Amino acid sequence: MARYAYVNGRYVDHREARVHIEDRGYQLADGVYEVVGVRDGRLIDEAPHLDRLDRSLKELRIGWPVARSTLSFVIRELMRRNRLRDGLVYMQVTRGVARRDHAFPTTAVKPALVLTTKNTKRLDLDPGAGIAIKSHPDIRWERCDIKTVALLPNVLAKQAARESGAYEAWLVDGEGRVTEGASTNAWIVTPEGELITRQTDSGILAGITRQTLKKLAGNLQLKFVERAFTLAEAKRAREAFITSATSFVTPVVRIDGDSVGDGKPGPAARRLREEYIRFAAAGELVT
Ligand code: PDD
Image (cartoon, rainbow, N blue to C red; front, side):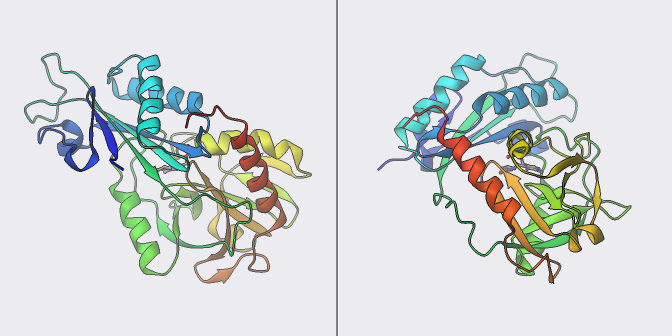
């Protein structure tokens, strides 16, 4: 079956999809993106993802490449063409194509829009064995709230994690506090039974999965607190887990080689994963 990508108004064979060499995303990482999860042909949390895209674009003064309703249509059309059941929709907007100059183009340039889809394994209710984390210094800039394609520090941290046998990196600031994962938000459950994730400010990306889970966590007998936690606190935690559009809720069982809790996925992470998957099942059916 042919796989399609969407590039600036056209659905093209994924293998033939191209952007211009002077696209500012390619040369300057001058662009933003979104990843929307798909489960059983249903888009998860489309509206909040498009709200965040709107915010990222505004922060960088990049215009919408098409109307929001058009983007929603394109997302669905690409899902249909690619028969996407489980996986993700990736969308990227860059400032457009212009003669290379760090400053914004002075002539009118149309923002460039690219969409792809990716099939991934359908995540089970059962999280399996859980994942290992490796800590890494957070060397990113001070606007991590903007979902830009400038991801080199995240790439290097993730690679260091993978080379050490861990699945994800947790980024640690100068005070020893975990900000977030390389491509996920970070959570712990303290020995006192508090559910903790860092407050949203310019230090982290305000995850959509995080936002939804905040609402779902109300069903659990845990006190929810938004604050920073240190790496040392995470290692002493009863449970830890990560959230993102693609990993949903995935338990963390090791941090830098130390077991978290009893080294197995904990009850809160299991329950929240189930709640999240149940929430995803209530979304709009597309394919
Ligand atoms: N990553 N923090 C960072 C740095 C991220 O890149 C992501 C998402 C998250 C979680 O956000 P959300 O719940 O909205 O997916 C947190 C996506 C999945 C990616 O880059 O592929």
